[in-house]
Amino acid sequence: MRKFAQSLTDGRGFDILLVAVPLAFLLALSGLPLVYNVLMSFQEVDMFSLGSVVRPFVGFANYTALFEQPETWPIFANTAIFVSASIAGQFLIGFGLALFFWVNFPGASWLRGLFLVSWVMPGLVVGAIWNWMLSGDFGVINFLLRESGIISGNIFWRSDPAYALWAVILANIWLGTSFNMILLSVGLSAIPADLYEAAELDGANLWQRFYTITLPMMRSSIGAVVSLGLIFTLQQFDLFAAITSGGPNNASNVAQYWAWDLSFKQYDFARGATISVIMILFVMLASVVYVRSTRQEVRG
Image (cartoon, rainbow, N blue to C red):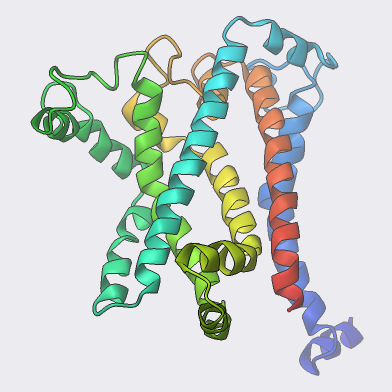
């Protein structure tokens, strides 16, 4: 014990302590709940056995029952649409803003900082704001669309099955665009200006410089942004709780909100854990893409 304490004071073993403390923290607050959730998806769980680890083992019965439910595939389809549209919208708008502020005009840094307001705001606050904006009777979105001549009557975004999911997608794009902009701005700033000067001397136009220099040099940053966007979008819960609550008739319901609804409103904890395990697999896939995308930057 004395040797261990001495190793911490003289520097030897201190690096092990720096790794051990956060690792123990992650195992206690993330690792054990994750294992508990996976274990629960293979068991029969009710409110009386929720606090116990030893419960009747049912194998893949929860997974089979889940995919036999008629609402499963429409909800998974909503999840795919929500994730794809959100990531595409956040990336395209964020990349456009990153290129816009890359010009570095007077006041660009201050204006770019204003875009971070959406990212630092709590999700429930963002959901409440968009809940008012998307109101069918007095919402500002309908007002702008009517005044511009795009629509003639009000759209009930939150209660119309054709628009409910897209209402949450619009709010989520607004929420995550600034995060994409910041990460992509960092990637753009790392590109040497000499490459553009040499390409311009060789006669390359603006599109050719973007296609042959910017996109290849931004490959790792784009991979990181897309993979992180997938992780964050699959975790998005607040906007659904604040805007549509998964309705109407599951028209805007997605896997992450459905898992919460099954577990804490219908008290079907096993099936809620089953959905969570399926989502964990997609998050792990996105994590692999993120690690592979940033490996070159870490080595450099």
